[in-house]
Amino acid sequence: MLFLNGLALIVWIIDAALGANYMFLAGKPSTPSILDVLGPYPVYILAEEVMALLFFSLMMLLFEVLPGGRLYARLGTYRKTY
Image (cartoon, rainbow, N blue to C red; front, side, top):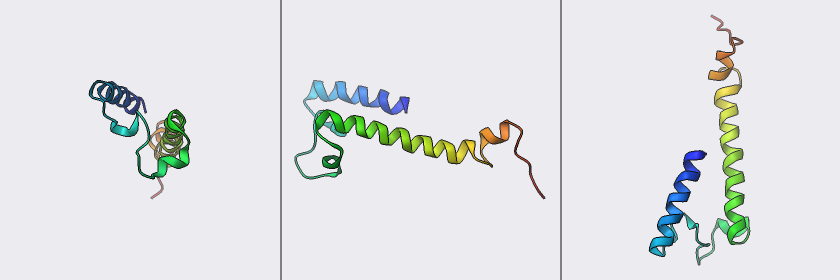
């Protein structure tokens, strides 16, 4: 998540320098898109942040915390059955 926000910051600076709109950080596209559902210009970026946080949290839960995950195994509660 930090990498994604750092990348967005770099792209936002490049967008401002070039007058571009990569990653749609300067505004929505002129054609209809899924971003229309997420709200007006600055709000849809925050909505995307919330969606990314929820998605990354779910992925961490599935692959790290639940039984069989690395964090679960590190805590010593994972037992192999043969």
